[in-house]
Image (cartoon, rainbow, N blue to C red; front, side, top):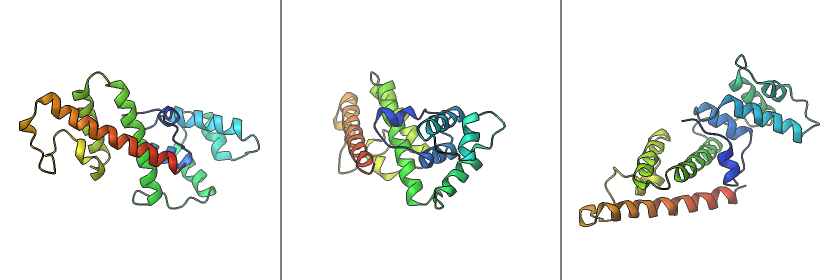
Length: 177
């Protein structure tokens, strides 16, 4: 799945070169979004003469986006952006939240399909434990027996857990901004 950085703007989540780098490495962002971010960055930082950013702003198919993003991060003293680092995990969390909120809007009239899409995000982000409570194919915890409830009630329960999760994530991500 490819997403736009607009998912961060819509949710008032701060994003920067680190976020773009992680999104690029996870295959979540279009090159054109990176180019547009570079153009916007240069427009608001007219004193910047960073050649990596200038090259990104030009865009094109023959550009090594990963190398240029890595160079920008190095020049910003961000050297620990590897998959197991805390910084990487935070940026991944931003992407996951943005994607989930985007899907929530796209499938607002079809909660069962939304739950299926959420399960795909769960798999794409390596099965994070904090999502277990609202994944439709997992066995419920805490003694809940879905056979005692209607399908509609079970979906409503999962959606409630999902909404609680989204609210907590949004509060956390906006707080660290």
